[in-house]
Length: 359
Ligand code: TXA
Ligand code: MG
Image 1 (cartoon, rainbow, N blue to C red):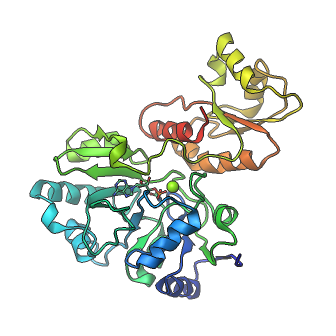
Image 2 (image 1 turned 60 degrees about the vertical axis):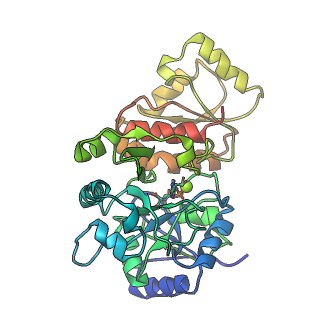
Image 3 (image 1 turned 90 degrees about the horizontal axis):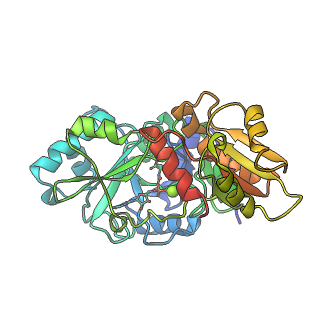
């Protein structure tokens, strides 16, 4: 066990952490989506440290984070210059599509998967011939990347399978004692991990993970329909993910719309008396939700509402933080409403809830 320090992003601390990373160590870093656990992307041993620190299986590849170029010319040539992608494996159409996408969405929460350059360690990509790349928008992430002077591999800074951290304090509760430094960039603005797309060598574009940049927005920019990828393309997309440590069940409908049969099914999950429940609600006010939840159970229930007004951006920002706080509360069993919004960002929220919930 080592001491873990949360450091504010002063120039001195940025230099300290950059040097720490150059020495092959890992550190917690803020991004606009969730906090990452960073290491030098081109240092095999440093990348291995990420897997060990997170207890992440080696078959789950990492995302490489890059700095915004000073001339702000964000194009595929920059990715080649950084030795991340393989120009010989990208045809003219893919190059054009990549340029359009990264020009539009970078810096920002979009991760793009492209043919990897041999210089990228195989361990980083779990032996795949492709590499996932993103240019984060968070100013502190950008400062660290510039100060470090090269690409940083960074998965979300949680123990494998657990809820992604959206504050420096969350990183501390996930990885405290295992890392020396966490760079504090405040609460993450987006709250959900980046949207991931794969530019396939069949010319199609696949959506691997939904996020705040929506399928519809991407389709409009590339003038092409996104396909849903099958699991074999995304080895890390395990069904169970983002999970709190307590039992966490998804209600079959929002509390307002549950029928008697569904309520009975829920009751069957609560066999014990004298326990406390936790409920993650999507919208509305906690008092009236509590009243309605009483038709299910008289057990005491802690309620967290993602967004009183039902604003998907606010709900996304609060999602992991509220799952975490219910998990840390005195509730014994947790429930969540399904996300009632199915398009756009609602789709990404429901994707995370489904993976976090037990069957
Ligand atoms: O917003 C984010 O993307 C955050 C912040 C820290 O940048 N990072 C993040 O990393 O969510 P992580 O490791 O938790 O999720 C990365 C996902 C994994 O599920 C992995 O399987 C997938 O990206 N991935 C990475 N490289 C891939 C590749 N070459 N092909 C398919 N999937 C890949
Ligand atoms: Mg993760």
